[in-house]
Every structure is written in C-alpha cells, then in structure tokens.
Length: 294
Image (cartoon, rainbow, N blue to C red):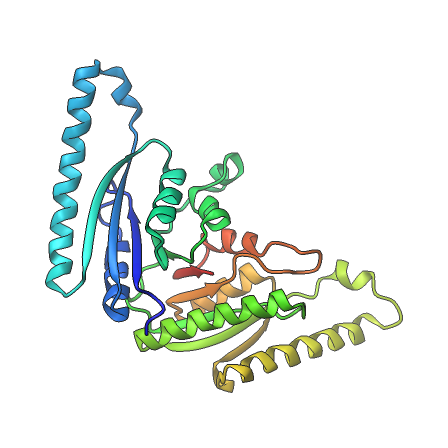
C-alpha cells in the first residue's frame, strides 16, 4: 500500500502559473491518493477602503473568479484520473489557515509551492514556509525548481554524527519516506550525508593533532554512514559522503547531480540538540529542486 492516501495541496490563486498543481497531481496519480486543493486567498488591504456593501460585493466577486479558475483546473486533473476536490477560502491569517486545514483534513502530505523571500524579509520576519516547517505536524512537500513533475532522482539526506536513538529513528523515517517516494515514482534513490568538522569543535579536543583528530572523526562518521546505507541496502554507487556545511554541500550536490527531490528531517540532534530545521530553512532558497521535510 502507498504511504500516501490523502494529499493536501495549498495554493495561492494569485500565482496561477505555479507548478505546484502539476507536481501534486503527478504524486496523486503515482500513489493512487486523493487530492484536495485549497486555494487560500490572502486578504487585500484595499478592500478596507470600500464601503461595507461594496466590500462584500468585491470580495465575493473575486472569490467566485478563483472558484471558476480552480474548478477548471480540477476538471483537467479528473480527466487524467486524479480524484480531486477543491475549495476557495478567504485567509486573514495564512499560516494559521494552513495549519487549521491540516488539523481538520489530516492529510498524509502537505504540498505547497516554495515561496522565495529576500534576505531582508527573512531578517525582518519569519517566512510562511519557515512557520510551516516548525509547526506543521505532517510531512511537507515544498515545490521548487523547474525539474520533472514526477521525480526521477530522490536524495535522502541523513545525519550520522550522533548515535542517540532519536537520530536513528528519524534517519529511518527519512530513508523510508524517500524510498517509498522513489518506488512510487520509479525514481533513483540516493543517500547522502554532508559532514562538517569545524575548527571550533576540534579546538576543545585534547591529546591528538588536528590532522589525526580530523581523520579519526571522519572515519567514525563514514563507518556510521556505511552501516546506515547497508541497513537499507543502498548500493555503494548511490551513497554520497561529502564534506562541507550541510546547506552549501547539499545545494551544490543538487545542482551538479540534477536532483529532483531532497528528503530531509526537520529536527535532529547535532551536538547540543541543535535544530536541523535551520538547514532546511536556508536551503529552500538555494536548491533547484523540491524539498520533502519529514
């Protein structure tokens, strides 16, 4: 049985050329899942300038236009064999509206277009996608890049520097999600770990030279990575143990190897229980592909 039975796609109807609908439809077709499309219309400040009667008329007219557009999209998808339902909702608080939909519909996967934010905006306020990565209780598929709507190359990005059970469990969830997605889409599954042995970490270690310590730590991490790969029968030519900060290394790998989807954990231990979410949050604006956040 597919890991996906019910998919929820959230779209901004003002972005009608988004590829998110095509990606969601392809995943629904491949997995046999039903698809619910919620078009969430952001509130417009200019409506407050109108008289109450005119405001309601303008609002309803706009919503009806979005319903007509979304219904036309749904009919196309039904013609391709996708079981799809739709709704158009006025959203005064976009992030809360999305979380409320997830809580009500209990989808197996939330799908959304990756929404780029400038560095200035990221510093000034928390982007919507970051809120969802931190608070959404189900896996999130953030559509990005311009690759194939049905992935052909899926990469599971794991963390092996900490041997605690919670890391092992999350690694397993990442790989199982990635493997199931790859099987459903007839895609190639890769396993990757980007390690970063930083100078500040090495500086607190005593008794070994910097070169010896770096070599020893790298060897330990590579052994852990190999054990994980063997546990899930990942062929040696599809394993990638690379050096560099995770965000930069994964981004470069995605560009060089034409990756379609990177599957990552949203929270993992790293040293002092560091959130890996920051890696995902920043990689959203670097990689030319989709992100599946577990």
